[in-house]
Image 1 (cartoon, rainbow, N blue to C red):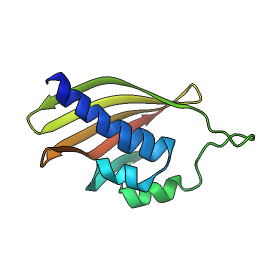
Image 2 (image 1 turned 90 degrees about the horizontal axis):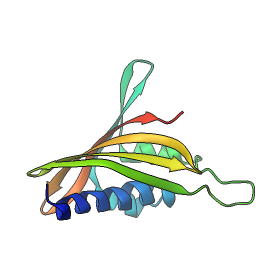
Image 3 (image 1 turned 180 degrees about the vertical axis):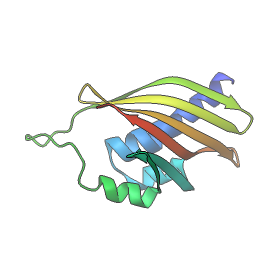
Image 4 (image 1 turned 90 degrees about the vertical axis):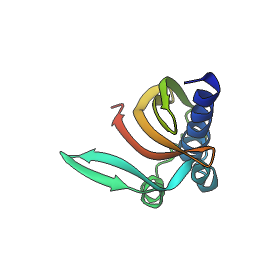
Length: 127
């Protein structure tokens, strides 16, 4: 895939997921990059659970890792690959919070009217 397209995919993930979900927990930012029919597939005790954006925000409601002094651990991330064919893309990204591995994420994206949107995510927890 050309560099520009790969950068566009990374931009969407950074804006909607890294900032929208982890950094700022900002609904508007998240919705700018996740497709309305997005679902996260969660593997729990050998069973697959589908979580949409609404449910995800509810689950994260009380989970901001605020330190005793009110600051938050820095969220850092690294892309391992972006692979694109036509209007489909996948990306692998690791997320660290406060220097500790939080999760390894695998994203699926489609391009809608020239805009990449995250349609699905699976992950492995860092712990």
